Image 1 (cartoon, rainbow, N blue to C red):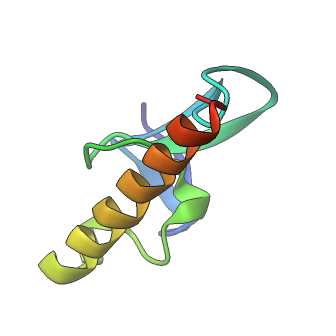
Image 2: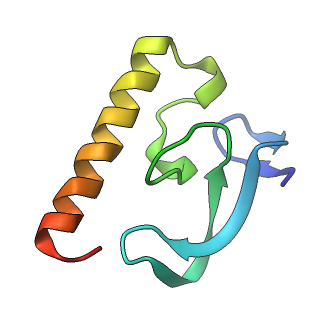
Length: 80
């Protein structure tokens, strides 16, 4: 928590670094920044176009739907 967030270019109380890989459900060789504000499947900051707090409600809903579809496709292919 309180790690540097590249979307706002400063420390954020919701940003944290971790080596978890949501695509495989295991560890990754590199640490990535995750956002703890929204709920959902893949909350790596690199997936956000802008900060979650600056997104409109419709942008947030679109992001959640996109991540849900990605999760379902990974389940179908057996990668998750």
